[in-house]
Image 1 (tube, helix red, strand yellow):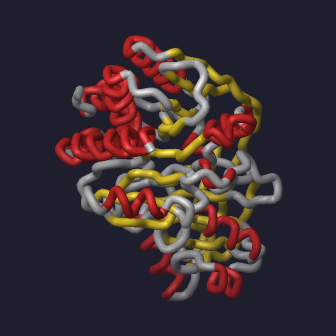
Image 2 (cartoon, helix red, strand yellow):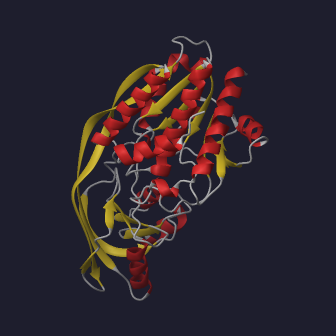
Image 3 (spheres, helix red, strand yellow):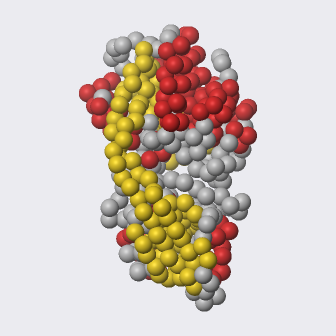
Length: 377
């Protein structure tokens, strides 16, 4: 079986950033399509439209107790534009109760962890906050990119920015010693763009199949998230083709980072085939050095996860709604990934040296065994 890591190096070093709407996204599609055809697959390129969000300009500043610009900041994808000024209040991890009690008419400052970014944003909107500042929980001037709404753009939303822990700690210090005020300005543009899924099979018609999938886009170079998933799926796809194993559909989905749009569109376009799907096996953010192997499952797929974990040591985790799978159409779905808090998730520093090469090759063998077993059931 071919190693996965060389694919990862090519993806990160030759293609680089694969954010939706960039040339890197198109290069990734061409690279993956070429590889799959070399392996002997019939490849279908599935086109879909999505809501593209971008910012034209933005500005953040503290206005009290001192006036200075916050330079280490990044607008969060899908947030609403506008200009606001108000008191900044620290709401901890951004839970619903604390946010609602403190944030009305103010700018909420929430720290990474505990709740998802989208949950923090939703709680701030519900609390009628003016805006949201999402600070990192690790030092090192880390700025985490990401979405605040999986609908692409929230017209009823609020301006939202990612800031570093260093900037956030200073705001908390001001907050605790007499209060802080700030001004946020964000100009956004929203349009419709095109992306693609790649659907690959060895045989055109299958009465039953197991779907193997991962997303190929990333915010930056995205070594862990998600060049690991791409590289493992390419390596496994090559081995399955060599074995001529039938009953497998290999899918690389676009726009995974902005709400799983590609996977959702593929499900919608192939709804008539749903009854023939035995299971969905996904890959996302494997083999980083800050965690252990984990398999994410729900009640329909727990038996698969338990069966696999009895052979290969791994943690069993709950499959959240933000891990986009076929579970939304009641197909048993699991995702092989990692546990632990990966500090470089969605940052400029998610680079190949953060990937444990030995772990990655072991994850490849685990995923290959999962696909083989389920295809033969």
